[in-house]
Amino acid sequence: MGNRLKNKVALITGGAQGLGKEMARSMIAEGARVVISDINQSILKDSAKELQCDYLVLDVTSKDQWQKVVKNIKEDIGSLNILVNNAGMGGGGDVESTDIELWDLVHKVNLDSVFMGCKYSLPLMRDSGDGSIINISSMSGIVASHNTSAYNSSKAAVRHLSKSVALHCAKSTNLVRCNSIHPVFTRTAMVQSMIDSAPERNIEQKLIQQIPIRKLAEPIDIANAAVFLASDESSFITGTELIVDGGLSAT
Image 1 (cartoon, rainbow, N blue to C red):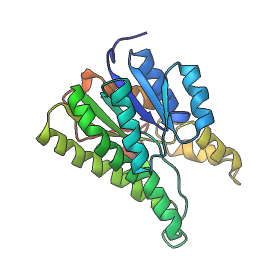
Image 2: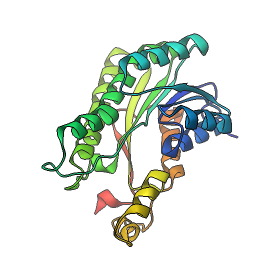
Image 3: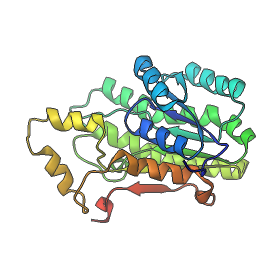
Image 4: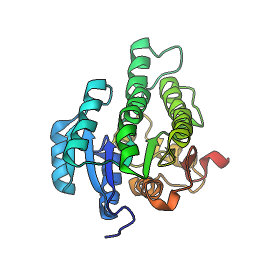
């Protein structure tokens, strides 16, 4: 057990599985009190029991639920120092094949949720003292592909929104920072399911070939980056992106 996040309270959306769960585990190990949220109540309860942490059901596309979650944290815990906007979804299709319904949904889940998370959490974070907002974007928000137009757009917008939030925080208070993390293909259950169901048998190898260090990222790689940005070690870092891509963006 470490103490890099001792006495800090963290809210992690999409925290019941995948990257969110790994970030929760790592932050708990560093002394934080973590609240995980997710729309899937059964998985959420199981993960909270496993991690021995607090949990709150949250549909990140709902303004009312965001306000309720922040109110609950304020009333039950009293403070919020770390917000990780991690909940998200994929969305395949090029610009011609993507229908407007999918486009809207991807942006609601991946982008609007980040806006609402920042908006409704900031007053409590400001009152709580030093704080860090960490928005999980993607390498797809920096390097585009032809067949994920909605996903590319939403994740690129998260990157720039994070900068806007950081500048707002710096102007209105120097207590809260905001940065984005941009992972490359990471070996989560969702990515593994995509690999397993792909018609091409060598899809995993094709993904790996794009990464200079020749392997997929592991969830702990992203969690380590999040712990750093949540900790006081990054107290002078705001308005930037932390790229965790095994060298992909350097090519």
